[in-house]
Length: 331
Image: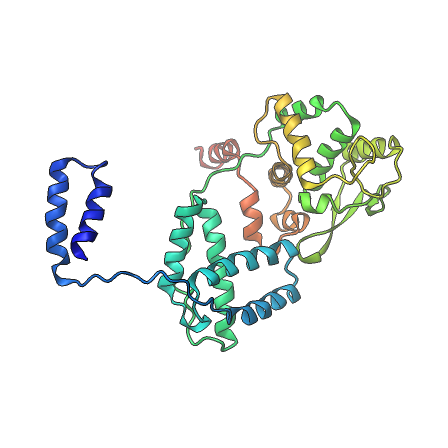
């Protein structure tokens, strides 16, 4: 068994190391394996352990009751089901090491980013913490999973010049109204597609938005946004209640993909990369902070629960930092 194993290793390594290194590796393997007994793992199909289904359903019901969105619940179910089916173990037999190895394999097979992988880790942590708190397991296997380090890149908002170029590129009133609405309100694209005409209060320039978990909040229109939105709605001939619709019959409500496609096209024409709905949200938040709006109020506008989340969306201008340094540190 050992000789067969060594032969397989050597066959795999021949293409990446020299003949001399292969011989050295062979000697080392023989020496290292002397104290071990190798056995072939059974690969027969085993009955799938499905005891997790009950606990998973209870967990998802709890999260739904807490107000988690359908999108979040789907992500919970997807990642937990995938992990539990792969490990094929009773809930109380899963260990920290098995979760760690699963995440490592997932990253290798799927080529996902560390940010994505850490989100999966957080899902596992939430699930097993709940199981432990409820007494379904005696030890939380996810408590030892350290946060996965991610490269923190500054995601740039749109500059004033880029915003103006995008405005001038818009050929249809709808597209200009859409652009101004996103920048003025900072809404999520998922919130935007759910809006209807009646949700807009043009007198007070208010918009009622239902965010994550069905939480209601108000956001606001600038005079410019209000002007272009009125012009767009007054020029429509359809009776669809949706705030933004396609320009051709049957004038359907715009989808997330549809809005992303419109903005990408405008960006390409204007020669600006990475023009997408979320960038307008970041731009609104960043500009509001630069002009002195308190962080707490920006958090309220964006619909965030925690200030830390707001800080992720809001970048600090390096020019502003330099200006402040010169102002406060000069003799």
